[in-house]
Length: 80
Image 1: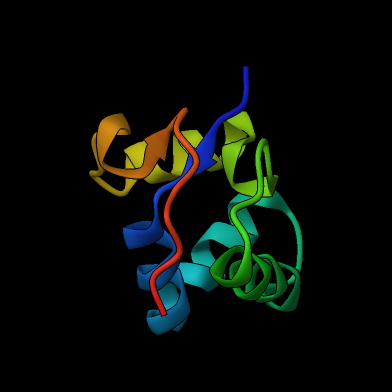
Image 2 (image 1 turned 120 degrees about the vertical axis):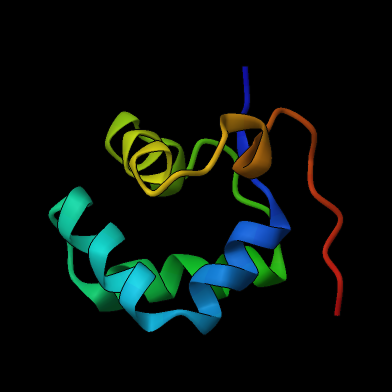
């Protein structure tokens, strides 16, 4: 089954550098790697991306987000 990160979370990661850095640390990747996935996700939804890995899902939950607020199995509509 394919999972996607919702547009709202992609936008939040794009705007909030501190959140992006903390996510990068949780994933043990660079901030640039997270930023690149954010930019790609803004152009075309990516199924089962880095942001749907267990470490990322655990991170979002630890930050206080409910799973249904950031994760979906429906292809998100890209908003310009």
